Length: 343
Image 1: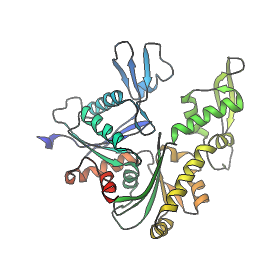
Image 2: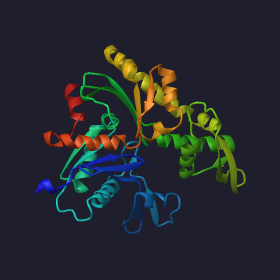
Image 3: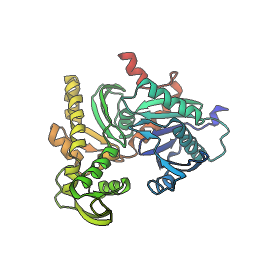
Image 4: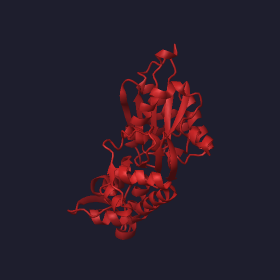
C-alpha cells in the first residue's frame, strides 16, 4: 500500500518552502509565513496569502515566520505549515503517508535536527530523511558529487549561508553562518534609518534588494523611489536611493560571507583546493542573485565563480533528485549521519 504514497522533497527555508514530488518535479513555492487568529489559535492563511498580511494585521491576527536563521523557531507553527503544504501537494485526499526528505543547514545541531524530523512526522510524513543544503544544492546545480573531485558550493538562502567543499558524495569541509537574505534586508532598514532618518518596512527593503541591490560596482547606476516614515516629522516621505548606496548598506554581511568562504578554503586539503581552482565555485540560493556577488568572490579568491542556472530552486531540485536513493536508506538522515560517523 505504501507504493501508492508519493515521495516528497522539501526545501524548508527561512524565506520560502519549495516542494518537489517524485515523478512530477517542483510543485510548490510559497513563502514560509503563517497567519493565525490570536484569540482562538486558528490558522487563517499560509504562504503567499499570509505574507501579504505581514505588517498589516489588526490586533487579533498575527502573521509570523516560524523559521529563523535556517532552523525552527516556532515548532507548532512549522508543523501546521508543513501539514498544510503536504496536504496541498497531495491533492487533499491523503490515504497513504508519504516519505519526506527535508534539507537542513550544514551547521544544524542534533536537537534542531530532531525538531525537523518530529515536525515532519507530525505533519503527516511516514518517514523523514534529512539532507544538507550544500549537498542538495550541488546535486540541483548538476554537479556529479560522487566522483573523487572537489567542488565548492556557496548557498545563500534566507536565514543561513552554507559554504561547503564536497567530494565522494559527502561534505569534506563546511561552514554555516546566520548571515543571508534576511540580514541583507535588515542592513537596508538600518542604513535607511541611519543615513536618511527614514523608517521602512521589511517588504520595502526586500523590494530594494531585488531591484537595485548589488555588491560589486555596476557599469550603470540604478535607482529606485521608495516611501517610508520620516523619523524627524513622523510623516510619510519619498526618497530616491541608488545602487551605490546599496553596496554601502551590504558591506557588513557581505564581508562576513567572504570571511566564511575564505575560512573553508583555508581548512580544505590542498588536493581539493586544486580541484576547486579548476572547477570553480558554484553559487546557489536567492542571495546569490544579488548583482555582482559572483564577480566579488572571483575578485577576492582568484577562483572563477558562477551562479547556478536555477539558483533559487537548486536546493529543492537536489532534494528531489535524492529521492531516487531513499529506498536504500535505513537511518533517519542522509549525509549528516555519514559525516558524523567519519568524525
